[in-house]
Amino acid sequence: MAQEQNAAPRRPLGARIINYFREARAELTRVTWPSRQEVIESTQVILVFAVVAMVVLGLIDTIFRFITVRLP
Image (cartoon, rainbow, N blue to C red; front, side, top):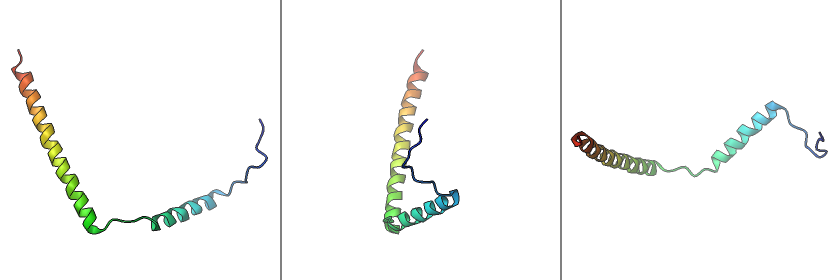
């Protein structure tokens, strides 16, 4: 089995872990975070969608239950 001649030497595990957290922190500084108002509005949209989905699925369940009970 041939090894690659130009392979860079691996850094120690501790150095790789520290580098990972440095890069993760740097990436988080570039994130555009939503404002409080945007979070509240998004949450409201999700809650309304969930309630509508529950009602629709409840109606479908009731219809199918009514159909299956009435069948001989």
